[in-house]
Image (cartoon, rainbow, N blue to C red; front, side, top):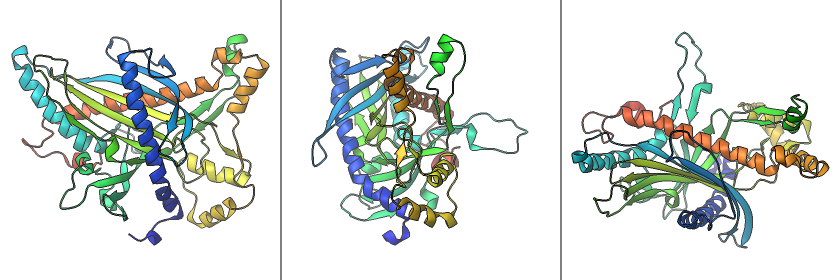
Length: 428
């Protein structure tokens, strides 16, 4: 497809893909080695690790966050960057069968999970919360989970970049197509996805905890509701499609692992966020389901990103504020004003920004000799809160997907055809 058909913003996005993908793969490889060392001995691995959440009555579920420094060797000049991230593991499902049928049930579970994860999960990972019947106005505020739409792709052995047809955007390609081409075509080298973040908002009370604890008065806060999204790029480096020879007598042995992941690409359009949706690069996310010989299925999710240098990025230019907040609140700059926006962004000083959050945090810790950090006013605390938001997004998406997973009796479609909303990806 000719680049003339792309907007300036799309060209900037495509230009950023190779570096974002290389850095994220570098992070992925580092995390795989580091987490393996941590699993073998908790004294090894991450520079700093902390328990993230506790879930009652689910002792097998766990999550932990971490901070470290990573050398990105994929760049022309090796660069060390501070990173943060988290890992969570959850129970997903287990066949309810008598002991004598364990092996049969495990085999069936294996087949079904493979089909569900590799072909359909990314199409049906968003879902709606229950809504009032009498409410004629349905809105997106009731949607939760992950939502994906595919925008652009590049095939192996080709320099050409093409755009998915509008009718194909929601029907995310089968993950096996990163390994083996389909219909005589080469496998995909990468695919760019758009991922809306449901229910995201920024809420910072720099003095709130101090005042609440000392005199019981709520302090000023910065609160920005937002309709935001991430640009993601998925390649075979993040796809997991592995099966193993195991001893069938060992019920805990992992017989298969299936999953997906992606690199984050920064949004080329200016945003009010310095850290958050659209502003995480270099970063990656990965979700992997493990099937055990007993038939039990568990899921493991990981998120790793560079440590932020700012939390908000507010322009010193009042007109740019208007453009930024229009986007943050889910709107689009009117087409008639877009030339003005582009022209304005090229003027001297128009791109100068400031962050009201981290400087305030540093100031409060300076004047209190570090005491502010003890009541949660610190950069580390802000990052931990952001990582917890990622944890909740994974948690809600995984739990919500169980309902979808269980309502289809046969994901291979042998008994009856799969519903149209599964095939089309228009689940929410």
